[in-house]
Length: 286
Image (cartoon, rainbow, N blue to C red; front, side, top):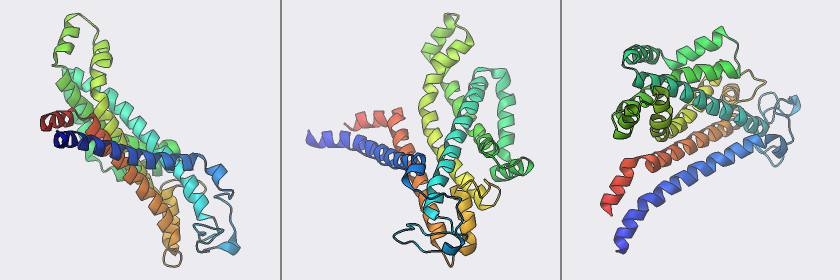
């Protein structure tokens, strides 16, 4: 009896631990970023030439960069920018992809047209598309978020469309159609809730991917301008002095890696918690 109880509870404990660790790390990073003006008194844009390339010490925990700016301040304030880009990109891509996926899955006429368009968008390299959009327009939060979200829309569309094609054959949807309910009511009241579990999991991976994507754009010099710190442009600026001052890259890179790791752990835990197949496997093993 004890062995069966442990077998049944161990997967649940593992899932809860993944959600707790990932969510806890992400929450700490969000709180640090939001409380940046109160946690550290230095201005991330303050230039102090006499203190350039100072190594970490008791006063300057993360040292200074090539023009004397405090790396700790820039990393904490840069977290606000990177996390904001990740959250807004995941939200924008998720909402647009969900609406398009619902339309494609519900309409047999529009399905082929929409999915061919999505296939065409997916054929365009996301990085080249983002560089082109940022180059044509000035680098800003809207431009970068739009470039990242546009590349994620086809993936969300395909996910939602697949769920809609499956759910629309279920008995409760057939019953709603038999009652003469409007199609929009059936879509948003009966079919959309079935899409929420995979959408939540997909949103976590989109969040992590958007943060990495913004870092890549910043590293390539087409992201935010230097006066708006983000982990990407901090890494790009530290590249030139890495051999003399490795802390200019190590600390922002560490924060970036921890954030992406936390989001991925959280996404894995949510996937296992929300995936109904896992519940069936747990019951069978018990």
